[in-house]
Image 1 (cartoon, one colour):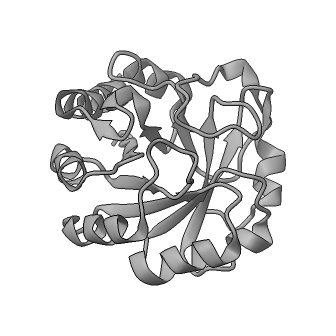
Image 2 (image 1 turned 90 degrees about the horizontal axis):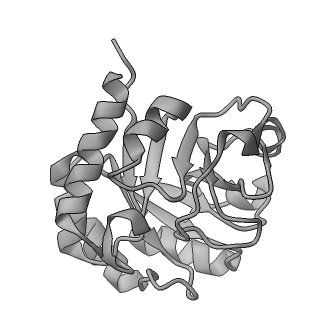
Length: 210
């Protein structure tokens, strides 16, 4: 039986977008708690979105060099299933809150997967994004195979520049555990296009089949 690549729709700000993603087969939706991001939402909005999700669809909370108290507040009130860290957070910080976490690795300048796995041995996985170190995700920059060095001991989540038109090829090329998309399925920052979301998830399945 072939592997089914999991799908996370990130940067969700609206309840209807979360529900549509779930109905199309998304395994997770991501909410952003980075104030500088155009996709950032508040805790109250995230609580409402969390309550609307159907069973077996995970909520992932994304942070970037946030204060410990800010992450704790989200964990206490929103109760995310998983955390995602995009900054310079070390393993001690990432494991301090309870939920399992994913650590993002910037690939624009080259990514040492073996070193990242050693630095975060308790992570649920590594998210490989096409942006440069210190930059936020959602930039639309794609990951190139030559940017990845070494082997990861952790499951890989592929992000960066993915869209309905290229995700099947990316799945065939990288064979990741999961893919993560934000800007590639939007009509505007934080507003998901229903047709693009449905097409993206369908194309991931096509990549798995080839």
